[in-house]
Length: 391
Image (cartoon, rainbow, N blue to C red; front, side):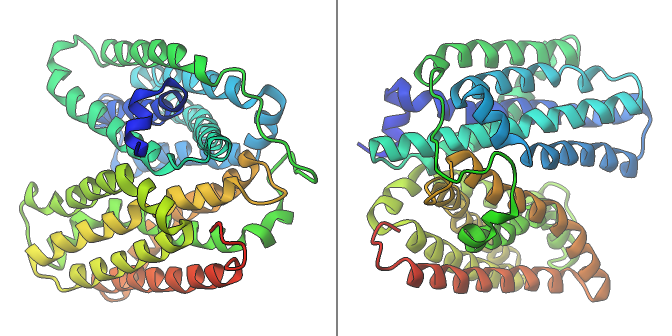
């Protein structure tokens, strides 16, 4: 039975995967109303960007504390607690009457969004190790599916709701209700304990997790850059000015990302995590070469290849971090995820700086270089762990 079948047929596996979907259902539904909130508060793009950065700050702050909170409360309890609070907190920014209120609300959403993210990944990691299965990639596929549900179905149904608050309330109630039912499969789970385990984010973990950390920084940094700059790249470099068509690059990236995550577990189980990371990075390199060709069709196909290559890497990094010897699942994942999110936040402005030096072509060449470095690091890790056989 493949990972996708396991997730949809057994509550033990569906419960954690549904948390992944729920996070993106809430986030993508909220995103539908960002233009409405911007107009209501009469703020410009710079102010909106700062407000969204408050979300990122909340995320980064919680990364340092997540493993401590999980250890004190319990992995299962904190997972359901955080997804409930995450869902409810979205009701505040959607009805914010002042800019300060919006920033504070998004900061709190970021805090519990991060706690949900770390706990759900740790949950899947522990279940994988207990049952000797591979469901991490498919669980991340559920996250992508949540975006389709929230943004896709939400866009079609948006006219049925009288106000944004009513829409968000209905979605929040649905998410909370379904997660309360699904949480029966993991609620009593305490979490893996390891000797010499650190309660908080500690740089003592740099050595055992260094390679995974750098890989997460590079790959999530590239994902953030593509999300922010792919449309502008097609407009400025490929010279396709149509608003609709210029977004096709990110669409192709997202579709192949979702597809790859749903079917990545079976490949990982057969070849191993590090092998699939190397293969994924090589596919991404091929994709970036296509993107840099600057021919519309080839560029779109290139973005698709990058999405397919990247789709399997982050789930595998979290899988490896979650089973690092001497480190709890929550601590390993939070450490690697922390630097991954840092890359996600830093790469868009860095690429903007490079584009000022020359153009976005230079920026995307830097992403190609990053993928090449990722291959080299993964090869080094593969060689280091060759004797262990499990990686």
